[in-house]
Every structure is written in structure tokens, then in C-alpha cells.
Amino acid sequence: MEETILKKYIQAGKIAKEVLEYGKSLVKEGASVLEIAEAIEKKIFALGGKPAFPVNIGINETAAHFSPTISDKTTIKPDDYVKLDLGVHIDGFIADTAITASPAGKDRLMECSEKMLEVALPLFVPGAKISEIGETIEGIAKEFGFNPVRNLTGHGLKQYDLHAGTNVFNVKNSSGKKLEEGEAYAVEPFCTAGAGLVKDSGPSLIFMWLADKPLRQMEARKILELAKTEYARLPFAKRWLEKKFPQLKLNLALNELTRTGALHAFLQLKEVSGKPVAQSEHTVIVAEKPVVTTR
Ligand code: MN
Ligand code: MN
Image 1 (cartoon, rainbow, N blue to C red):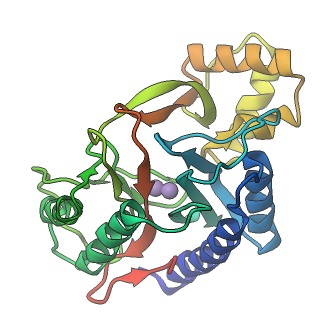
Image 2 (image 1 turned 30 degrees about the vertical axis):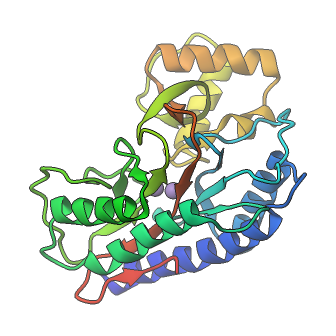
């Protein structure tokens, strides 16, 4: 990897780490999820980064893709498992990191996802097999007596590309992929006492540019332009648009944009058994001594 690119990955990681620590300090009983999300994203800008995606705040069985709207009234309850998952980019070079926190403090489920991640990271050396890494991560969850979430994976990272091809499975798998020096990955094990499977749940709160399409509504055309410019073809929050467009016109525009295939709408992902899910995530660059940018 070029030195200038590595520097950007490391700078993004440093900001992401600091913001995540700050975010964790906000997870308190009674705290507003909306206020936490806004504070986290504001902090990313204040430290000189840009959000690589809207902060995801998944509570309990919600594993991923929840980011509050401006009218969200959710507050943190004492025993909630609160997953904070945030991304920072510098010129498109992304740091993706997550923790699970609770006003009740750390428990075995949180320890499990932390251990799954901790054991996986040193394996990101050139030539390592994705199949073996998944098997190792799964083994830790089983040792704890939990299940990994088998249809959630880590992912390759490239410039302005949050999900760049290769998946990093958290279970035994038949991938033939071997890691190469300089590749960047987000490694994110999830574990649960439930079935270990998430299902799609509405509504969509996060969107991303997919293709240029002819659009009828003026607001839809403006949003597609924002998706490519301000949001750099990375995922963005409905909440960000709620500050720019009236609600009714926004909803109609988002309908047209998703119906025509101009935008991808991320569905919320919830554990099928309704059991809480814990997640831990770091970004790592493959090397003989793996570089964890977010730690
Ligand atoms: Mn993430
Ligand atoms: Mn990720």
C-alpha cells in the first residue's frame, strides 16, 4: 500500500476510535438515541473526518442498519445492548468500527463479540484464508455458549467503497479467498443467544446511490445528485435529508428513487429469535504485522 494512502486509513482510524469512545460515554439510561447519533456525526466532522455512513445504533435484537429519523423518540433503557457502529473516511479511505455498550455494564455476550474480534485480528496476514478465519471466529462464540450471526459478515474496504467484494464470514465457510498484503478489511463478529440469523425488517432509514435513472420528481433528482456529490456514493441517512426536504415530498422522492433502482434502500436487520445481539468491529490492513487502524 502506498504511504499516502496508508496515512489516510490511519488518520480515519484515529478519528473513528476517538469518536467511538466519545459515543460510548453517551450511552446512559434515558439518553436519546437521536441525540447520540447527532453528537457522534458532529464529532466526526469536528475532528476533520467525514462520515463513511450514518452512525448505526442497533438496540438489542436490531443488529444493523438502524439510524434514527429526526422524529425518533427512543431512549436507552437500563439493560439495553446498544451497538454503536460508525464509519469515518478521509478522501474515501474508510475506518469502520463498532462496540456494544449498556448502562448495565459489560456482560458475557459483549465479552464474546470482543473476544471473537480480538482473536480474528492477528490472523489478517498475507496468505491467510477467509475460510479458516471464519472457523476460528465461530469457535470462540461456541466456547462462550453463543451463536455467531451467520448471515452478517465483515467486508473488504476500498476507496469510497464500503463493501468491496470479499466478505469476512464469522462462521466456517468454503471461501477460497486468501488475504493479500495491503488489503483493508472491516472485521465485525456478531454473537447472540438466539438462532444466529438476522432477517430484513422495515422501514429503510439508510440509502445509497446505485445508478443514474430518469426521474420524474424534482426532489428525487436533487437527492440523487446529493447521493453522488455530498454523500460520495456512500450510504446516507434519511435523517440527513429530513433537514433539507419537507417530509411528504421526501417520502415520495425516496419511493421513486428506490422503485426505479436509482438508490439502494438498506433494510434494518433483526435477529430472528428476537434475542439481543452483540457486535464488535475494527478495521485492519493486511500485513505480516496486521495494522488495526481503529484501535
Ligand atoms: Mn460497521
Ligand atoms: Mn462494517
